Length: 384
Picture (tube, rainbow, N blue to C red):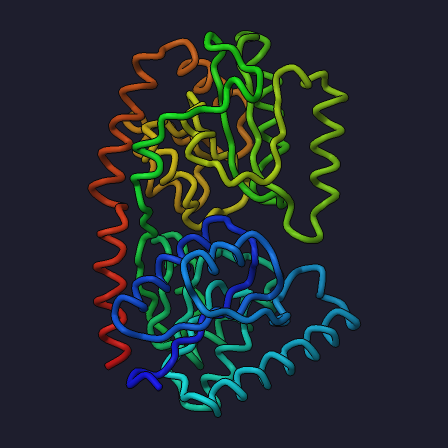
């Protein structure tokens, strides 16, 4: 048995998007500090083989993750049963080998906070989201943070500002996400040939899971507007839907067809070759229409030296320097956003300069080394 008790990581998703990638970084930091780790996933998915590849122990169990679709009597009863089973699993683990810390990644995971509080185990909540409604849920989650986590980690100043309004005791600590830059900076392959995109065409890309806040339909409106002036522009969409939002994916596909965008928009779904996709990209767009806490994909675009056009929605306003590394535009403003895309399509030198400045900013502010340093300092404060 290790002299250091096991650190249990609870995650809300088995997919391999931003929050999952950051959690893998955190697990590696704990492992480097000598702590044995165990990840509990809510199901199978692309994250599982990556966990195996990196040599982490894991278990799969439905954790009773909170989603909007469960806010009805039958859904709440179902979540209660799942939470009870997850609680029992944590109890079994703790009896076999004392748990030194429970690390809950995103506010959708609540069982860890409850178990940790009742067993007197330190608990960390890594908060990646800005939840505005329903009001009762916001207040409930804030109360759980107050009762379980004296110093929760939040991924941006925007997230901190939002939750401070509801917290009485907990003091959020901002630790901006950081990424490993080598896969993006050293990527030499693109996917133009695979997609049949000729070299003279400009490629505008968005990457993100399909949900009501990510702005995929807004992105299609931008595509429709831009191609009227720049017909040699291709728009790439990367990402699959959150469970329960498959109807939005269907709406996207119908819109592409009905608006005659088939020759200009390529919907790639989930992809793991993000460095290659960004290598193919000329302009990256984050079209979020709801607050987006601190989208890791913006960092990946910056590492790839791409100019970023983002809506003023949460953490992006902290990441993008308007007029220098890209542009910040008003949420839902088709005219403004499409004009910025068109400008960068027409001014390759400006786009390149912005991309390089973005890369410099990333290396200075958001590298993995910065993230690791801050995380280690935090861990040493909460664990021996």
